[in-house]
Each structure stands twice: as C-alpha cells, then as structure tokens.
Length: 351
Image 1 (cartoon, rainbow, N blue to C red):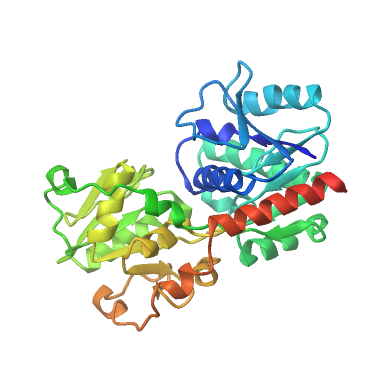
Image 2 (tube, rainbow, N blue to C red):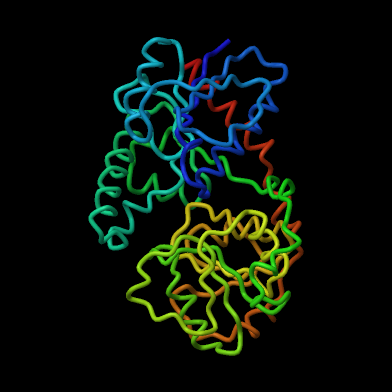
C-alpha cells in the first residue's frame, strides 16, 4: 500500500484548462480507487473552494498559508511529517527540495515563447516557471504531459526528462454534467441562435485574440462573441461587430457553444487544447488553429485555419469536409486517463 499526497493548490485557483485537468483527474481517480489499498490524500489550502465529494480519496484542508507560500511551505511541512508520502503535482508546479515524485507539465510555453511575456508580472511568472521546468525535469521520478507534441517539446529542451516522461491526455466527459442555461439570451439579447461566432479567449498573446479582432474586421456582417478575461485591450481597437463578454458562467458558455454558428479557437501555442475538445463534445462546429498540439488532439473533426493569417472567409472555412465528432471524442476518457495516472503514481512509489 502506498501513500500519495496530491498537491491541491489548484482547488483555490481560478478556472483554467490546467485547473480543469486537476479537478477532473482527481474525481476520476477517486472512482478508480474503489478496490484499492492505496491511501490517497488531496491536500488543499484553507481558501480552497468548490470541494468535490470524494469517497476514496481523503480531502484534508491543511496549513495557514495560501497560494505559492502554501505550495512551498505548508505542503512540504505535511510531507516531511509523512516521509513515506509521494507528492503528486497535477498542475505544472511542485514544491522544491522534496523527495522526488510525479509532476504533470502541461506545456513549456514560458520556455519556447519568451516574447509573449512583456509586463513585469508576466516576466516574473516566466522566471518562476523556468525554474520549475529545469528543476522538475531533473528531479522528479516521473514527468507526465498532455500530448505527444508537448512530450517532444519537453524532451527537446530538457533532455534529462527523456527517460521518464509519458503522455496522459485530458478528456471531455465533464461537459456531460453541465447544465446549459436556457435563459442565456435574456442576458445577451444581442446574440441570436446560430448567428454568431463564439470564442473563449483572452487577448494574451498566446491565445491570439487579436486574430479574432482582425477576422471580425474582415467579416463585418458577422457577430463575434468573445468570453474570458481580456488583457492588453488598450492597444486594440474593438470593431462594432465584436461583443466582449468578459467572464461568463459555465452554464452560459455551454449554451453559447451549443447555439453559435461555430466555436473559434485561434491559439498560437497549446500543450493540449481543451476548450475546442469541449466544444466538439457539446455539438458545436469548431474552427481551430492548425498550430502545435491542436491537429493531434482534434484530428479530422474540425475546420482548420492558420493562426497567422486573418485574411479568410469563415463561410468558406466551414465548407471544409470534416469527420463526425466521435472519431475524436472516442480517443479520450477521464476514466482511462485516471487509470494511467494511478499506474504512473504506483510505479514511482515502487522504484
């Protein structure tokens, strides 16, 4: 029997694809542990919210710190008091100077795209993640990533990871639990069903939100609804056919995905690309960037565009022949990914 301590800092973090991976992976692992003798603890900070109901994984709220201090001080303190525990980090970052464990590095965007980080805060974040990448790829027993693309990227830039890295992908089944809002048009009366393009994006450089703005300018008769936290808007002129929605609920996002003309995802760099997979699972037509991991993940079921060329006619893009979504969706399962994760954890414990 092994003791596994999951770094639950993500339970207090704002929703993102990486946080979604952590939350869904924990729930799926809990379902896989029904007949296991392993002891798995989800250690969470005092400000963690929306705690799931788990039957086989113990949830323990621990420590007084929050954020990075919790991760680097409180979590290590618990593990020092439980020296047989293996630390499992699902969201890119781990405590320094602990017994080697398992960490999921979703991508190394901070390493390969330095020009995307220009503000003081972004540069500080890049410095922190660069330290983590180098330390973790050298120190950990096992590195996991989301896609073959990310595996090759990590192996290229951090050769010490080559012998201990594997792929455990995201999945989409969590969207089946969404309760899509039926009254979304009361809050967004300017959006008509089937008559707008929808995107979950920021104007951060890697998400390529400026491409959406440029495409909107070239397609003035179409409405573009963009949801998410928006940055760098001061340097961008927003045309009249673009609706910047800001943060919206999962229920409203679900409804918009189901009622849009197409879901657009023009990202320049992704380690996996969860939002377009979710949109595909919700029945939307998907227009996706053809960059980095996205063709690997989405296969032949979406309409591809170059994220570097905004001079396109979206009506013509949607004429591309694509396969039924099941060709892609059948490849991904949280249950399968959780089983692979548990196997990787156990292999670390017995080494």
